[in-house]
Amino acid sequence: MPEETRTDEGRFQSGIVIDTHVHTMDYLPRFASSVFRRAIRRTVPPPFFLDQLPSAGIGAVVANAVGDRVATAWWGRPPWRAIEEQLGRIRREAEGAHIELATSAVQVWKAFESGHVSVILGLEGGDGIGRNLSRLDKLYEWGVRFLVPVHLRDNHIGTTRLPWHSYMRIPGIPRRRSRGLTEFGHAVIERMNSLGMIIDVSHSDTATTLDTAKRTQRPIIASHAGARGIEGFERFLDDSEIVAIAETGGLVGLWPYHYSGHGPRDLDALMRHARYIADLVGTAHLCIGTDINGVPGMMAGFRKENDVRLIAEYLMSAGFSADDLAGIMGGNFMRVLEQAAPR
Image (cartoon, helix red, strand yellow):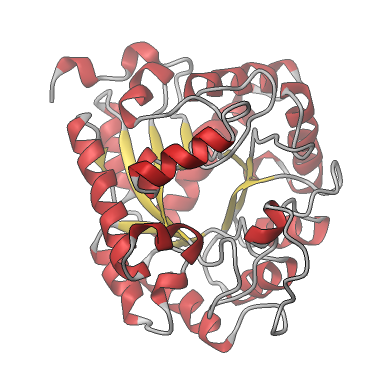
């Protein structure tokens, strides 16, 4: 591997730093991405590409394709084929940047110890699975190790926390079924557990999140979230959900999102979420998930992946210990990955 792809010089702490939820620019076709970014140009962060990771000091990221109709419709093909195309583009971008694709904790550690960055594949939105459980096996074969079963609309697996039309402030679209994990959703959780795929409940509603926590035999995460005890934003988790996730051994990701009056306004506000969750369940259940390229706006003081180091600085100034910091910035994530996909 070329020397210029090493990430040693960009590191800002000795332990591994992991962003548990990002998107490349290819989850939408180029024309659709351009239209979307133009519509939110006043608030959207600059484009992020995987070749920026070494200078940002990031050791690994979970890079996500998007599998629900809100995104896949733009590809002009069935959702499953749109997912396959997006995953292929993530692979090609990683390979072009000389960044390693990892499917296990051993591979992530090996890359980190040799001074390199790794990318783990994820899928946000299980709509393309339909009712075909074997597609989980195919995703696993393609290298996917993370799945957000429910994204911006209800599907055959469960129900969403905040539907796409609510983000867009379109009223009057009622839900047509009860909330929570479906019978097929139970089978999805069991199959993901057996394969070694990690469940991300970031967009699942309360009923689906609690059902998932009860059903799983492995840790689950909410990679990009917040505490409703700090702000009553619907996308954030209430105390019962945070506790349920922690009881699986899982994680809640600090999310530097701010848009249309929702989310932490700045790094000080993000620290209030960190402290609240830590006081409730302990620092061992915190991680970082920026959702870069997937959000219309970020909080003040956070515009790019290089700013992840600012979160580390603020955590220390907010009274978190060096051990806490090492866990939150990446060590806690690696513990979960080692349980689900050790090799």
